Image 1 (cartoon, rainbow over the protein chains, first blue to last red):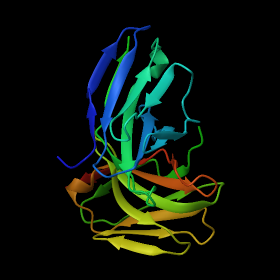
Image 2: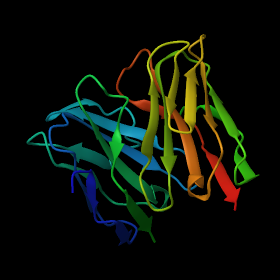
Image 3: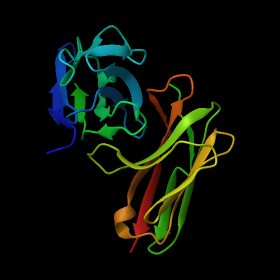
Length: 114
Length: 112
């Protein structure tokens, strides 16, 4: 399809495990965003890429969170040594250059840490 | 993290009624956006607003960018059952034109 895709859709991890979440943005979208959405809340910004450059990572909650987009397309959000408070839906969005507000979201990955 | 003040938190209305929700911020925004999120899905963009005072429509939806640049509202006219979902406002910070700041959402239920 032509939209943003994310995988896996659901992930259950035991506390302390590492996880990797994948995002495939819309083809041609240079900007890519990761958000964390807790139950009953709005999304909260984690990090932003323009092509392969990570221009803003101010929202990453700790150094256990790491994101990359090495070739300027697919991105991976990695969480090391997962904690229960990491349980949330992780949303990826992409946008065209110059239209950063018009972000197109994937379905999200629901992470549950037990 | 920072979030916008969005109200009401939830609404339960009859099919055919009009709906209004709004969002306020303590900060000035360059862009206001309204999204709808269905269960298990990501938010879907409804309307984007770029100028203070701008009034924009998308079918039965109308949104306005407040002249103070600190607020926005969304109206839905003649609601139908498929309008059910959670509506979020989001603003793009004037000092950072990349990330979006989000409201907590308005949950809309429509009784057929």
